[in-house]
Length: 314
Image (cartoon, rainbow, N blue to C red):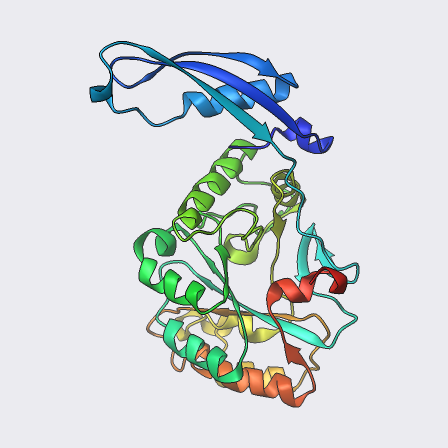
């Protein structure tokens, strides 16, 4: 179900009651609104009913009518600390008033670093945040359950890992609002298999960590918050490989750059869970060393939601 955009702008709650017909073959027939607080909710309620899966045709010898009440509760976004840093509506740094940082991990089709990452986090007593596309959520439930059952935050990284806006012209959105909403619906259906709701995974990282104001506005309509990593920190370049030429950044170079720059309050470090086989010495094998370096500088690695939430809300 999608929260109506105009209702979201006004932060309206509402209710619609739909009566609909199930034909003898199990398909949805006629549908009409019998009660509604606003036309906006009526339109969405009818859309939801029309997209219901086919009923079991063997249960019925004739048409039958059902009545379905649908309640709409405005999906408020998770509260953000007043000291977080935003870029184009997405969080790129947690509270700058606390000597805390967070670690986030993303994966599409490559995830071979899951075990060393989990071992490092467990050894350090740290909780991470993991973001997956549909490839992981639909094809590797053992990996997702392993991460969730260890108490780490699990959400999505878009559904199909498609680019949301142009690399060169960020204001040029490459996906329509309807396509974006469908992406979110699909992502949360997949997360639902792990007993993870929209509320439980209201923060997500867009594909390629690239988005614009429109994407964040659409996310906000659904009570969702876009998050990315803190730009400038080289851990995000751990996906590069030697064949990329000058764009390649080795693990040694990543550590050299890290040690040559100060950690900042609220930094969000991004590490990829998997990389191409041609990359020597993947960074995910050195997560504990990164945490140890952060600790030596006097910073604490905290869960992502703790980093971006108001202190009094934790």
